[in-house]
Figure 1 (cartoon, rainbow, N blue to C red):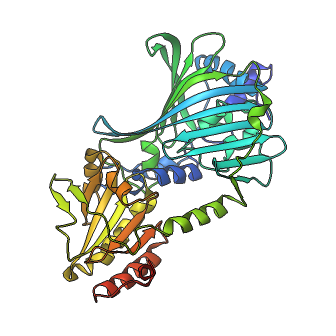
Figure 2: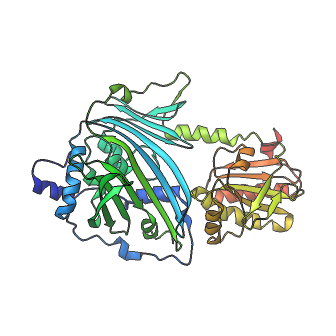
Figure 3: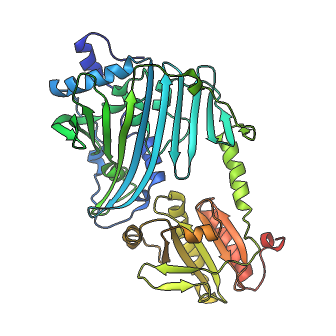
Length: 459
């Protein structure tokens, strides 16, 4: 359903009564928490928003200035029959004013109202695409794997609830790039204020208008659109830090910020779009799965069959946060637990205290735990680790050399190495605290007695 018609009063009313929040829906909070380390931060300097953040926002009304900017853009999207767009996403972690980590990805989108589209998300680790041609909807997990959705989802349904994760928070970007959807539903409900900041030169060359919105959970977003008759989006910048605090499941340290920056490199809601873009043609070697769950189950089973299990671990050298080094030669004769993790990996962070507590019980039996951070800035890792109560030896692998050496393709990943250097156990994923603790205890009980773990004996 499109919210726009020729009645200006009706437009104003509908713009201020959208049905879906931009950031603060619970499932969105969970998705963000699953992507980024802030979900697990425990610090003393954070300021919780408490129950005040959960109070319902007072009735929100757009002023004429904001309406004059948004109505032409939102109306053009809602009335559009087709769309094409390329959008670049930068997820930035800031510590004390310095960007310490940036995750880049991009989207290529084409659509035809009401239920034909292709949404292609490309990142360093993912090539995910959703196709719909009005008759079927297909998710191409990779060039070699895909599955069909049980029903065809129209453009608005993809905005409201994508069947697969398309980055940390794709809803506002999708609302601005899919034909015939109503952006007001995504952008304007739950707002406490929305104002025009002023006229700017976007990137120093494009006449633009900057808007700033505040939600009742404290989240602030800035939105730049062109200052001309044919409005188009230029950039959407969302500061997620207040939302992370408002969940009351986290406490964010002073100086920490997490933001999403969507840059609309190209965008149009006119012209022609080739219908071939909406049709899925699997590669000859592509495998069809029953569902995403079926694909994930098989992928995890394949990952569990690690090529180093039962074999000699490669020699390695690790750098601690204080700059000192520790090598495999230094650990000869000890049982070594290498736990590969990252600040953005929530399962890693949930598993860490379980592993640490279990291993600590064997400290007097020459069992050593090394928490190996993968591919992140050392300053970020240090600032994050200091706020935790893990009591573990944290090391860094900023270029990901060690995880490549150990042929790891997915984290959480934990390896248990015997005193003779044989990889006796490999854990992929997080089965939950009780199962993980039991697995480690059973394995360590065998190894401290000089035995071998059954799963490695056949290798």
